[in-house]
Length: 123
Image 1 (cartoon, rainbow, N blue to C red):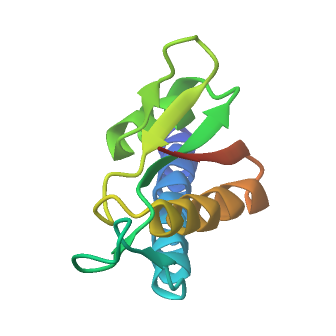
Image 2: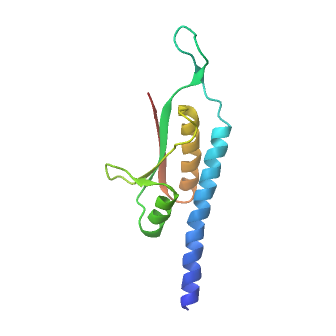
Image 3: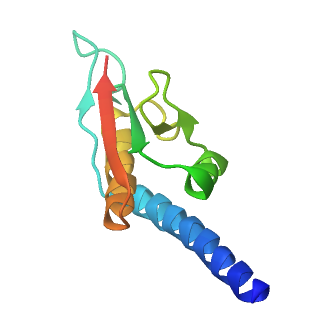
């Protein structure tokens, strides 16, 4: 009987891992399909560059093994105490690519029953 319980626990853990892998792939695919708007410094000098910004994926109401798995993946507790957050560190400073990744990632988590959303902001 104990072996069955362990198998169920392992399956749940693998399931969370596979959801996170799927979310990561969806985020990457979403970012690859995005063409960031390019801007130039006033006066038109220099090379165009994308709008600079930030994004993260927020997950609320997780505890136990789900929370542990999210933290293993890189999620951190939000400072104001409302859930955990995965900061999108890739894509240099591109607001639109970071936002696209976070949206794709959050959408997969939502499909699997997580209370998730993405946040994006720019300077």
